[in-house]
Image (cartoon, helix red, strand yellow):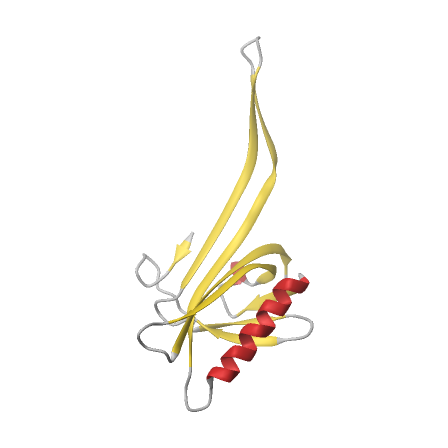
Amino acid sequence: MEYDTGGNRPMSTPSFTMTSTTYTANLNMPGYGKIIKNKTNEIQLLNFWSGEITVLDKNTSNDNLILSGIEYTTSTVSKGDISNKVDTIFDIQNDGEEITITNLEDSLNNVYIIKSFGIETTKPWSKGFKYDIELEYVRDV
Protein backbone atom coordinates (compact mmCIF):
# COMPACT_ATOMS: atom_id res chain seq x y z
CA MET A 1 0.00 0.00 0.00
CA GLU A 2 1.50 3.34 -0.98
CA TYR A 3 0.17 6.82 -0.35
CA ASP A 4 1.56 9.89 -2.08
CA THR A 5 0.44 12.83 -4.15
CA GLY A 6 1.53 11.08 -7.34
CA GLY A 7 -0.75 8.13 -6.56
CA ASN A 8 -4.46 7.68 -6.11
CA ARG A 9 -4.68 9.04 -2.58
CA PRO A 10 -3.13 12.37 -1.59
CA MET A 11 -1.48 12.61 1.79
CA SER A 12 -3.48 14.59 4.31
CA THR A 13 -0.74 14.96 6.94
CA PRO A 14 2.18 17.38 6.46
CA SER A 15 4.16 15.84 9.37
CA PHE A 16 4.17 12.97 11.83
CA THR A 17 5.36 12.63 15.39
CA MET A 18 7.88 10.03 16.55
CA THR A 19 8.12 9.41 20.30
CA SER A 20 10.51 7.13 22.21
CA THR A 21 11.08 6.89 25.95
CA THR A 22 13.79 9.57 25.67
CA TYR A 23 12.86 11.72 22.67
CA THR A 24 9.97 13.29 20.74
CA ALA A 25 10.34 14.69 17.24
CA ASN A 26 8.12 15.98 14.47
CA LEU A 27 9.31 15.05 10.98
CA ASN A 28 7.99 16.95 7.97
CA MET A 29 6.23 15.11 5.17
CA PRO A 30 5.37 17.67 2.51
CA GLY A 31 2.92 16.82 -0.27
CA TYR A 32 5.55 14.87 -2.16
CA GLY A 33 6.53 12.75 0.83
CA LYS A 34 5.65 9.07 0.79
CA ILE A 35 4.25 6.37 3.03
CA ILE A 36 4.88 2.81 1.86
CA LYS A 37 3.54 -0.16 3.81
CA ASN A 38 4.89 -3.62 3.04
CA LYS A 39 3.66 -6.87 4.54
CA THR A 40 4.83 -10.34 3.58
CA ASN A 41 3.68 -13.70 4.80
CA GLU A 42 5.73 -16.87 4.63
CA ILE A 43 3.69 -19.79 3.35
CA GLN A 44 4.60 -23.36 2.48
CA LEU A 45 2.76 -25.49 -0.09
CA LEU A 46 2.82 -29.26 0.51
CA ASN A 47 1.87 -31.68 -2.30
CA PHE A 48 1.18 -35.23 -1.14
CA TRP A 49 1.31 -38.37 -3.31
CA SER A 50 -2.41 -38.82 -2.70
CA GLY A 51 -3.04 -35.60 -4.64
CA GLU A 52 -3.91 -33.69 -1.49
CA ILE A 53 -2.51 -30.17 -1.18
CA THR A 54 -1.93 -28.38 2.11
CA VAL A 55 -0.97 -24.71 2.53
CA LEU A 56 0.76 -23.74 5.75
CA ASP A 57 0.83 -20.08 6.79
CA LYS A 58 4.08 -20.03 8.76
CA ASN A 59 4.03 -16.43 9.99
CA THR A 60 4.24 -12.80 9.04
CA SER A 61 7.90 -12.35 8.26
CA ASN A 62 7.83 -8.56 8.21
CA ASP A 63 5.43 -5.68 8.44
CA ASN A 64 7.38 -2.57 7.45
CA LEU A 65 6.48 1.07 7.07
CA ILE A 66 8.69 3.41 5.03
CA LEU A 67 8.27 7.16 5.52
CA SER A 68 9.96 9.75 3.31
CA GLY A 69 10.02 13.51 3.45
CA ILE A 70 12.16 16.62 3.63
CA GLU A 71 13.35 18.63 6.62
CA TYR A 72 13.97 22.32 5.81
CA THR A 73 16.15 24.95 7.40
CA THR A 74 14.15 28.09 8.19
CA SER A 75 14.61 31.22 10.22
CA THR A 76 13.79 29.17 13.35
CA VAL A 77 15.28 25.77 12.33
CA SER A 78 19.03 25.64 11.68
CA LYS A 79 21.17 22.94 10.10
CA GLY A 80 22.41 22.28 13.64
CA ASP A 81 18.83 21.60 14.81
CA ILE A 82 18.33 19.11 11.99
CA SER A 83 21.75 17.55 12.69
CA ASN A 84 20.81 17.05 16.36
CA LYS A 85 17.51 15.45 15.34
CA VAL A 86 19.33 13.11 12.91
CA ASP A 87 21.92 12.13 15.55
CA THR A 88 19.15 11.30 18.02
CA ILE A 89 17.26 9.19 15.46
CA PHE A 90 20.46 7.23 14.74
CA ASP A 91 20.95 6.73 18.51
CA ILE A 92 17.39 5.41 18.85
CA GLN A 93 18.00 3.07 15.90
CA ASN A 94 21.33 1.81 17.28
CA ASP A 95 19.80 1.22 20.74
CA GLY A 96 16.87 -0.73 19.24
CA GLU A 97 14.51 1.55 21.14
CA GLU A 98 10.78 1.30 20.40
CA ILE A 99 9.07 4.40 19.01
CA THR A 100 5.42 5.35 18.75
CA ILE A 101 4.27 7.00 15.54
CA THR A 102 1.31 9.39 15.70
CA ASN A 103 -0.40 11.92 13.41
CA LEU A 104 -0.68 9.47 10.51
CA GLU A 105 -3.76 7.46 9.56
CA ASP A 106 -5.11 5.46 12.50
CA SER A 107 -4.06 2.13 10.95
CA LEU A 108 -0.43 3.35 10.80
CA ASN A 109 -0.21 4.92 14.29
CA ASN A 110 1.59 2.06 16.06
CA VAL A 111 4.76 1.08 17.89
CA TYR A 112 7.78 0.37 15.68
CA ILE A 113 11.54 -0.03 15.76
CA ILE A 114 13.75 1.78 13.27
CA LYS A 115 15.25 -0.68 10.77
CA SER A 116 17.04 1.94 8.68
CA PHE A 117 17.37 5.68 8.43
CA GLY A 118 18.99 7.69 5.67
CA ILE A 119 19.33 11.39 5.00
CA GLU A 120 20.92 13.45 2.23
CA THR A 121 20.98 17.07 1.14
CA THR A 122 18.66 18.11 -1.67
CA LYS A 123 20.98 19.32 -4.39
CA PRO A 124 21.44 21.97 -5.65
CA TRP A 125 19.30 23.51 -2.90
CA SER A 126 21.20 22.98 0.37
CA LYS A 127 18.41 24.15 2.71
CA GLY A 128 16.56 20.83 2.49
CA PHE A 129 17.44 17.37 3.74
CA LYS A 130 15.61 14.37 2.24
CA TYR A 131 15.09 11.46 4.61
CA ASP A 132 13.83 7.88 4.41
CA ILE A 133 13.02 5.98 7.57
CA GLU A 134 12.09 2.29 7.50
CA LEU A 135 10.15 1.08 10.52
CA GLU A 136 9.35 -2.47 11.60
CA TYR A 137 5.96 -3.03 13.26
CA VAL A 138 6.11 -4.16 16.90
CA ARG A 139 2.52 -3.78 18.19
CA ASP A 140 -0.55 -1.58 18.16
CA VAL A 141 -0.61 1.54 20.32
